[in-house]
Every structure is written in structure tokens, then in C-alpha cells.
Amino acid sequence: MRAMAVQARDTITPVSPNALRYKLLKDKQGTLFIFAIDASGSMAANRIARAKSTILRLLRKSYLNRDSVAIVSFHGMTANLDLPPSRSILRARRVLDNLRMGGSTPLGAGLVTTIELIELVGDKFGETVVLLFTDGRSNVPLRRSGLNVRALRHLKIEGELRELQVALKKTRARVIVVDTQKEFESSEETRRLAEILHAQFVKLAPAVVR
Image 1 (cartoon, rainbow, N blue to C red):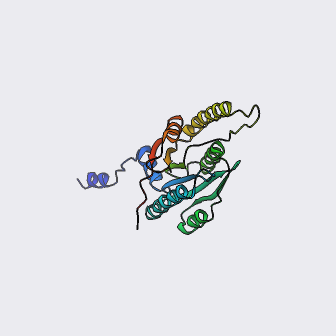
Image 2 (image 1 turned 90 degrees about the vertical axis):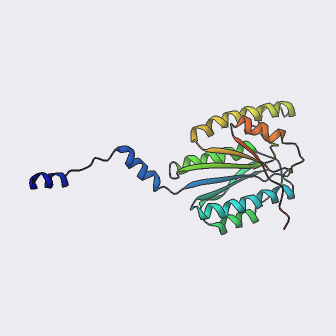
Image 3 (image 1 turned 120 degrees about the horizontal axis):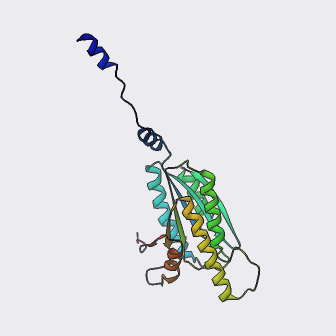
């Protein structure tokens, strides 16, 4: 009987590969939130102020949840990675306060920079969420050759956005289009953008008067 008892105590319970995988995923650094911000001239002061207010609230939540944030901005003819993935609220706020505004809306360039960032970080994070703050008025194509006719430019931009949607899908990031316009302004362009990108659509809530 004693021999049987010792044998029972020495029995090793096998661990499945799924259990190990779950353990590895739990050790990852939470979610990466990428704030892709339209800083063009059409994003008037009140629109960008509403976007910043929302982003600051999200930053506080991300800090409490031990998530990371990155900031991409686009205006004029280019897009910039203003903040690589970070958990510092102070750094993120400094970037928002110093955000340069004006010019056209190179939405495609902003998405390309966002995709490049996601590919660069790889699987470092458990999930990646892209929040695209914009009024939806993209007017600068990635490929600027050919006739500069407004109707043709619009078709070219839409075609490029559809190509970028395919690239975004491959990254497995969740994309949310955040309409920065006021509640009484039309959301037709931002809803169309969300449809093209296969993204969730959200309209900013009215500003809270304090």
C-alpha cells in the first residue's frame, strides 16, 4: 500500500500547450492604443479641442489598465509618429499640447504610418486598437501623379483607402473611426470612411460644460 501511495504522489500531471500559450499571453503588456489624429486645417479649433479632451480621458483609463499609447498625426502632405508606444501620460499630453495644425488632409499617409507602426511592434501587445480622429475629409492621395481633377482625385483616394483596409485587416488591429464634428453636423463622410475601412463608427458626445 505504501508503495502505491508513493507512486501516486510522484505522478506528474501533463500540461497542455494551450495552457502554456494562455500563460504567455497573460504576460503581455496589455493593449496598444494608437491615436491617429487628423491635424488638418478642416479640423477647426473646436473639433481638435473635442478630440484632445476625449483622448486625455482615454489616456487616464489606459494608464490605470497598464496599457500603452502611441500618437500619429497627419496634415499637409505628410504623417508623423509623434509618440512611439509609451505608458507616460505626461509625454502623451505634451505631444497633444504641441500638435501642429493646418493644411490638407493626407489620410492615406496617416494610415500608412499607423500600419508601419503596428508591423514594427509585432506581437508585443495583446491587442492593438486604432482610434482615427477625423472629420473624414481626405483630400491628398498617396500617389499624386496624373490629372489633379477633384472628381478623379476623390476616386483615387477611395481606391487607396480600400487597399489600406486590406493591409489593416492583415495586422488584426481593431479600427474605430471617431467623428470629431458637432452633433448637428453631417457624419456622411466619416460614416463612409468607416464603411470603407470596415471600422466601427463613433461620434463624439457633446462637450461637457464645467
